[in-house]
Length: 493
Image (tube, rainbow, N blue to C red; front, top):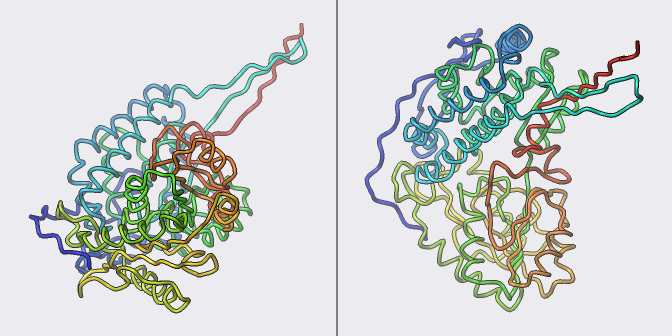
C-alpha cells in the first residue's frame, strides 16, 4: 500500500478574504448567507465564505458593465493595460509561497506541486498575455477604389467566467489573462469547493492597479450564482471549464441572448504505449499523466493502451510505483499525493472502483480509502480492462488507471477514438512514422508524443467532440475575447 509522508509540514496560511469582491470593494452576500469551505486533508472548516446569488451577480455585472462602457480599461493605452497585467504577475510571484499554501489548504494538492507546477504556469500565463495587449491588430482590405476598408479587433465586453476546483489559480489565470489583454471586464464565479485563492488574486489585481469594476469575484453555487451569471442580459460572453453536462445547460441558457461561449470540458484520454517505446520513460510519463493532482485532471491519461508483449511488465512496475507513493499532509514537502477535493469526489471514485471489480477488471493496487481522516484514495491500478467497462469509458477524475491490451497498430486508432471525449491523447514509440500517423488520426485537441501533460501558454488548448468548444491559451485563446469589426470609408469626392 501507499506510504505516509513524515517530513515537517509548512504552516497553514492566513485566510485574508472571504467576501464577494465587487467594484473594488469587499462586500458580504446581499442575503447574508455564507457557506463553509473545507480542508480536504482534515475535513475541518477553513472559513465561512459569502454565498453569492442572483442579486450579487446582478450588482457585479452592473459594475463590470460600467467599467467596460465608461471606465478607463477598454480605452487606455494598450501598453499601459499590458503593464498592469504584468504587475499582477509580479505580485503573484512575490506572494507565491502564500498562494501555494492557500491553494493546498483549500484544494488538497501537495504544496510541492503547487509551487513547482501551478504557480509558474499562473505567472507565465499572465506575463504572456500582458505581452499581447499592445499587439492586437486589425487589417486593411483592398476593395473598390473609392472605398477604404479596414478591420478592428475589439473586446467582446463583459465576460462571465466559471472555473473548476482542480486548478483554481491556474484556471483563474487562463481566464483572466486573455480577457484583460483584450480590454474586457470580468465577473468570475470560482468553484464553491475552492474559492480562496481566486479571492486573494482579486486583491492582488487591485494592488496592481487594475481599475475597480474590471475584475469582480462572486463565490457561490452553480444553480444560483452560476446560473444567474449565464442568464444575465448584461453579460456578453461565458467562459466555462467543467463537466460537459453543465456546459450543455449553459449553452442552452446563453442562447437566449446569443452570448459567445467557450468551453474546456472533460476527457477520457487514451495513452498508447507501443512495444518499441522507451519503456522506462513511458512508465514514468504514464504514471505522472494519470496520478498527478490526485488524478483530478481533465487530460488525465486514464485509458492506457499497452502493447501485448510489454503489458505485464508495464502493469507490474506501475503497481510497484503506487505501493511506494507517499500520501499524507499536503502541506508536507515530501507528500506526493494529497486528498481528493471533497467527500463527494472521494465517494464517486470509490464507486467506480467497485464497478470496475464487478465488471471483471483485475485490481492490482489501491482501490480503498487511505486513512480515516481526509478524503484520500489510494493510487489505484486496474489490469485486464476492456473497452466497454465503465472504468474505461467514464471520466472518473481520480487516481484510477485502467490498462488495456492491444496487439498492433491497425486497431489502436479506432479504439483510441471510440469515445465521445476528445481532449488529449499520447503515444509512446521510437518510430517517428507511427507517432505522426497517430497524431494525425487521433481525434483530440492535444497530442503528446513521448511525453505527457506538457503545457505552454503559447500553445492553444481545447477539445474535440464533447471535450469543448473553442480554445484557451495562445493567440487562439485571445481570439475568443475579441470581436471583428469592419469599417468602410467612402473616399469619393
